[in-house]
Image 1 (tube, rainbow, N blue to C red):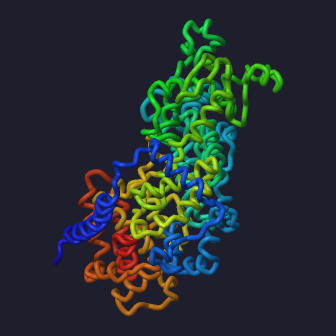
Image 2: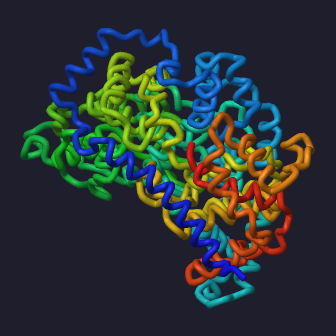
Image 3: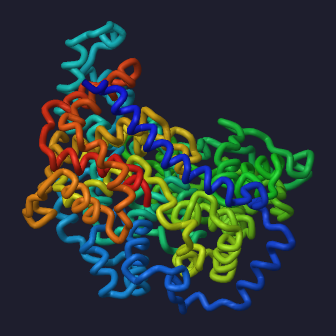
Length: 634
């Protein structure tokens, strides 16, 4: 009898070998170290040549010059700009026309009636930040409110495992109509999974994911977590294909970002002149003092890049420019409540006269701003500039040549390959500069370039766990009734969406996702999905093939590989996977092998359950395809 652990390890070796071979091949081909983010004089010349000779409004896709048929090119577009396409989708793109389909996706205005009906059940995702503050005040504030109103005895709070205390708190929340924060997060996560699975505007959803990751905020920081849903909904999603300056400015003013990177508390003592300040540009910390977190990340991660040509002094000076940028009062006793009484005394005219600026949930407080002279990246800011200093700084960063290169490279890494050619980055940066940061035009330049269609780009990106899960349910035409169940599996595979703690966001290169434990979980996910072992996610495998029953496991492997991997040469893939079909209990053995590997560090109850009793041939075949190296690529 075959050792089940050896069966699984053999597959993993095959899987990892195929994936790593791709990554190593890219490493050998691409001269990584020769592309600094800061534009050199030679790069400026290249950019200027592109700007002088291009027409960004007229384009066509040069896929034929790269040896691709129209159907192969359509499949490539679907692999990069959707969360997974099927044979019917290829037909639709070819019929509409590749360029027209791409423009339609950039526009992102296709009707989503069925999706909208699903999202209606998630009512809290549409709440304003003020409404969230009032309905989801969080544990600490709820407790303070309950103690202040006498609903909870202060002496009972510190007692360990006090059931009476917990019951009192729940009763208080019910009486006041308050909800636990986890309910909001659950709805927020569910809407992302439903949108990615069902939206007709697939590119808009992918771009929302890209820019959220670029301007990352995290649910792990409790102070800003409740503002994250509105951040994605109102700040990121509406601006994903617009101009970069608007996107940057909107994120800078968002409560989620202001709290996440601590700029809402950054302040400096107002200084109206160099004489009053003692030394020109000298800062006088006020309450809270100067905080450089946002200033550093807005240069390093949001605009210029780590090699973008700024210094530590630029970071400090930029932080001084952005003092006074904070949060307007929201809710009863929530963030910004400290300025509520002050603002109540001022009518709009008085506020404007005193230098206050209020835009939605953003507030500029002149009394917390450092009014002395400053200099950032050689740009001089005269004393007394107030709110407009921050606007000017962000505009300067948004249109800086290093930003054009940095953003272009990140887009190319996401949508072309892990190590895009410098020539492609130059073309995209040229468009960025010419169009003053028009994201749509930069995307058109990217997809119109030969590099996008080259062999170095085809199927050279590795799906993240989120992309794998969504592409799998889309390829199987699954009915997702409980999206949060998919979140559990995506987290198990290594990507807990919205919970990445660092401001960098999730890495966008395939090697980050490749490790034995994660790959075992990917295989288990495929088997669980195909065998109907994920609650609230239903698939009809027979319907995908018109209810025609394959003659054998090998025939099913070929048929379903063609259905799930449209316009790819599946013969090599099926050849590698055929040996795995000789074992009728593979799925159970895979689950048991995975359990023995990860027992020490994971809860394996779901994994074991996923494999229990799975003898259905078709489910086993489809599960193996989902776990195969070819399906992992896009």
